[in-house]
Every structure is written in structure tokens, then in C-alpha cells.
Length: 184
Image 1 (tube, rainbow, N blue to C red):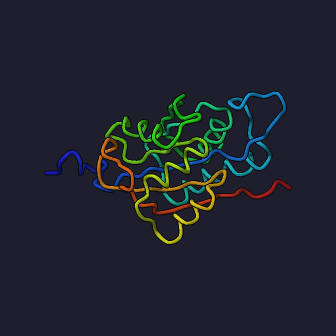
Image 2: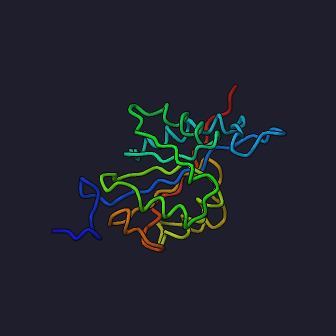
Image 3: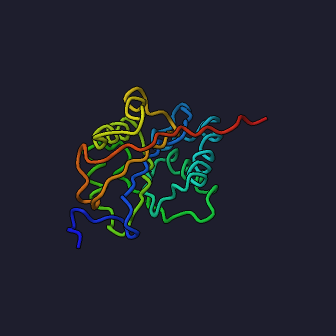
């Protein structure tokens, strides 16, 4: 019998945290930060994130998304590429959160959630990945240290509960930067 600290997802596989930085936004004059829309590149790249998730079978059980317009729209366009989009919660704590605040949010994720997708903003997301990743596959960690660009998706795994997730306790198994094709 596993102890609660070693609990895994319902199917026995490690837990996965998918960290998605919103797609490229526009900077219209006079628009508050929370209301900034996606720019042309963001509108092109956000669906590519959904295709990446579908093609790699990296599908979340639950999505926690910042309520900022650019984050919500990124996820809406990505989710439209999935056969069966997962439940989504818009959490105001995610807008402007730092790495420790984001970790607090993760500690409250239901244990029934095997894979969570977190959609939000930098620098908090980049700092969260660097906080959690004790190791990485290939050069993924070095790439995050250099830059975690818009539309980037990081995949972290560990054995344990959401509550047991600690700094350095996860492995960064993948870093993808899905890009859409230019409109013609």
C-alpha cells in the first residue's frame, strides 16, 4: 500500500504538470493588462498548442487558467483542437502570481487529477518550472533558463500527491514551443 506522500495518479502513472505560457499578446494603447488580446502571432500559435497536446497524448484532466483575456483566449483556441476538452477553471490567483503563489495553488489541486494544465504568465511560470525541476531530460532546463517564450509548454512529472510537490521534486521531461503556420 502506498503512503499518501507517494500516491500516484489513478492509473498508477506519475503525476504530470503541464505549464503553458499564453500565446503572444497585443499591446493596444489604453487597454489594461488583464484585458490585452492576443496578437496575430498568438492567434496563429494558440491552436498549435492544442494540436501538440492532441498529437502527443499529453491531455490534461483539469485546466487552471488565468482569467486574463490573453490566457483565456489561448486556452480556448488550443482546446478547440481537442476531441474532448477537459474541465477548465479560471483562477484569479494565477494572474500576476509568483512561483511560490503558483505552488500554493498546485497544492490545492484535487488528488483525482493525474495531469493538470496551468495556463498563465511570465515571469511566474518560468520561475515555477525552475523551482520545481530538480532535473530534466536533455537540454530542456537550460532552454527554460534562457527563455520560456509565449506558447511554450513545459511538462513536469513526479511521483506523489499535489500537496507533496516540493521545490526540486519534479523532472522536466519536455519543453515544446508549438508554432502555427502563417496565414496565407
